[in-house]
Length: 306
Image (cartoon, rainbow, N blue to C red):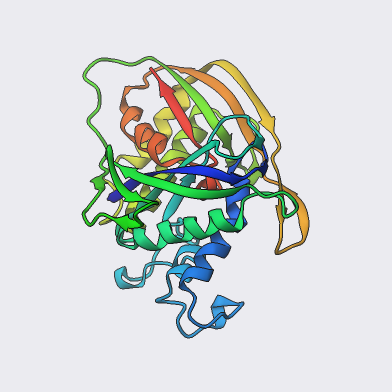
């Protein structure tokens, strides 16, 4: 599966306040900016629009099963992007401060990078956060693979393919028996149809397999060849050695529903012990692409230590 990672460097032009988890501030602001950039008919409901199967906004936010590959088993295919907001606890921003974030695009959506760059520029001008005191940003530059590919001053985007190919890596040749998983952003996983406050190893593996297989099926050439049943079954033997997890509630305001909402998840770190080695290729992909619910705005970002 082809994917690209793009780093956006911005400068604050008007200071203001943002929530501690900045991903919630991106949610409505980015969608509004992208629709403003690409919508040709200014129709409120995309479902009734004649252009919805071709419109970039509808394809990004109103995701549908991939038709050209026949019926998909995915009831809700993944979004084609992940925004990784700054993870600092800072909430107040002043003029000329730096504000950086990253964008990951999957599959053919990398071809639409200019639209995403333009949308983020418009989002910065409109402002992030509270309507009463938004943080307004100027996009300084965009980098990919160590190269500057866009200059805000020149407003030029370099042509080229800045993508990489994701494949499950080889199983390490040395045994790994201890794995520490840091939850950089809250993780929302369901167990028995309820959000789970704990993460047994089998639940983590199921979520990683689900995330990777859905991305590869939707944006690549099909699910990777993995022993799904065997991996899930053997995961039962992996034990939790240390558990420093806690539930973290994140508040966000929904302009569409005109009310405050909670999008919390599990935060902290957890240590597993057992025969970890066969699981590292799939978990390393999940580390790259996030996992769980609401990954598109930065939730479910993990880091592995082994």
